[in-house]
Structures are given as structure tokens and as C-alpha cells.
Length: 266
Image (cartoon, rainbow, N blue to C red; front, top):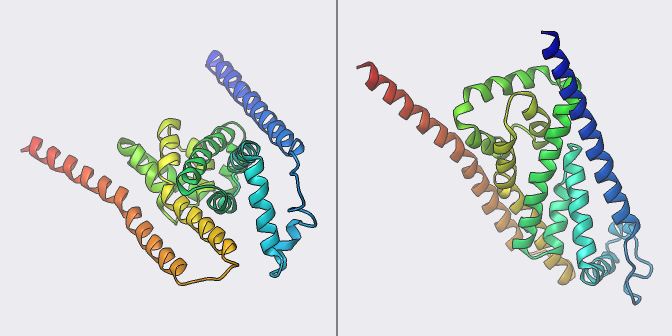
């Protein structure tokens, strides 16, 4: 038993060192990208600051500055966006504002791709950090939820990918908790990564479309029409339907397994 414990302690030590190294490396990358931000030529951004978000009469100036800067420094803006997105998800933070920003800055297919990749890698980074560093904290703060998720994961271990997709779609369990809890209840990283990439596309589409609508409003002097409300209602209904698909698949698989077991008994 002592050699086994020594191996386990060594493995945990390596995971903690790796997690701290990942934090330091990515934090350094984000800091370098922010500090090396290039300037923009011309006077389109003169007198512009984030405080203009509170000034309805000058918010158009802020939008013009942001559009010009993104067009002039596309690669730097995109690299910084991805680095900040992955950092926020890796630290179990909300990234819905960045999803809306992606919809405003990029064409819809590219915005979906960037946010999907950011969700997959950022959530996986949170998964690794939680498994290495946050186990005692999460277990102490959310013991009941953690135990319930562990029992559900054990019951659905034969449908782990579909189960992870359902976790990403359901509104009853926030994504930040899934990222923290999944490594602690025995969910493998591979289905977790795939579900983070594809299972979040519905909610990401809603947010990026919101950003695209805000961009169109900015280009039309913020005249709100009825198309946005219709689009939002349709997306909400679509997301509600999609949340039922993984549960229906799991139910059908279990029903088939039960029928096969009953035929064998006969």
C-alpha cells in the first residue's frame, strides 16, 4: 500500500505543478497581448472610452471606434479575444458577454467557430484545474450537488457523450459547475471536450445572434425593430426542443436494453 500511496502523491504533485504552470503561461500570454495592443491611425477613436456605454447619444462613436480598430488589427483582436475567452472559461467565469461581442465583431459562422473552440478548450482547462486544485473546495461548497451528479454520471456511464451533451443544454445545471464538477465525479475528458464543443452551440448561437443584432442596430443608429423579438422567441423555442433530444435518446437506448434483457430471460 505504501508504494501505491507514494505513486498517487507523486501523480497529484505533478498534476498540481502542471496546473499552476498552465495558469502562469496563459496569464502571461493574456498580459502580453493586452500590453502589446497596437494603436490605430486617424481620429476615429479620439475621445472614446468605455464610459460612453452609459451615454446614449455617443454610443455610436464607441461602436465606430471598435469597428475601425477591429478591422485595422484583425489578428491581434482575434488572438486577444480567444486568449481572454479561454482564460475566463478556465477560471469558471461567465463568458456570455464575449459571445455577444463575437457576434458583433465577426460574421456569424466565424463567431460560432471561435466561441465553440473557446468553450471546448476553456472548459477543458477548467476541468484540468479543478481536478488538480479545486477538489477540496468544490466538495466542501457543493456536497449535495456533487453527489447527485456523481450518481447520475454512474447511471449514464454507457451514454457518457450524450449525457455530457445534455449537461451542456440543460438550464438546471450551470456550465461553470459542470466544468468544476465533472472531473470529480468520474466523467472522462474526451466526451467532456466533445460535448463542450458541440453541446453549447445552441446557447452560443443565441448569444452571437444577439451580438449580430446589436451590430445591425449600431449601423442603423440603434432603431430597434420587431425582427429581433421574433428571432429571440424562435431561438428560445428551438433550444427548449433541443434540450429534450439527448434525454429522448438515452430513454430509447435504455428501453432497447431492457427489451433485449427481457428476451434473453425468456
